[in-house]
Length: 60
Ligand SMILES: [Zn+2]
Image (cartoon, rainbow, N blue to C red; front, top):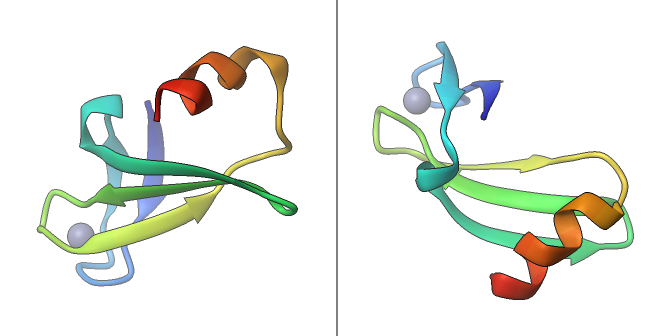
């Protein structure tokens, strides 16, 4: 769970794992795609690749 400022509704909202639609490993880190409470598609780059997220990335 993390908070994110939506580019559509411009509200800072809590994003739950169930709202995440995609998780992609890139050279810049992990790109999370998720749907805001307002229905807008959003993306966010998380920190570096880490061991703790590898299991989730494999499942994605
Ligand atoms: Zn929104």
